[in-house]
Length: 247
Figure (cartoon, rainbow, N blue to C red):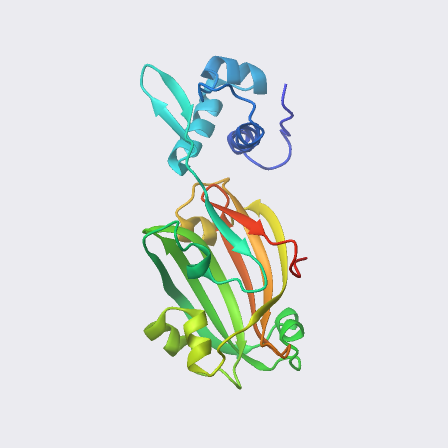
């Protein structure tokens, strides 16, 4: 029996949904791509069928499963987008050839005092002004990532206004005379999406996201961007170039 923590504060159906995701990822189910029935799953997790049904409904809404009346529940085998992370990570270039259209939506922006983590990453004095940009990126109309990025306000005071016109961070840097820049570091983790990410990426509760923390710098090493991004794990796969500086 799979382990379900009944006193964890996490809903049983959500834990079961996570266990099913893991089982799918591990290739546990046979080539028919058919999930065991509700009775079998209820026995496996020692819960009632209603709880199992809630877990299945959540995964179906998310697009992980497909429920066919009279036939059963099947695993949806959607090909995930490959997003390369290397020394020159660019959203539109990374998805080139895999999608017809990429688009960035500006959700929020402000000039604010840099939080400690941001000022350290950008090599600024604590509390220095930075431009904060919050965006959602979509591929062929489907949201695949949301990002929050900070830029030194002294150099990029009207970054948000330029984003409204150009819709691309790379294009904006070029408009400032920065023709090329490099990814200095990337940290990657995986966890459940928070409410804001669920809403922006149109995911159901319990969905897993891949989070990256990254620093971009000019060719001379001067930091120009610190960002945190969240990718829908069922829609996109991060492809790391091990020859680059990724941590």
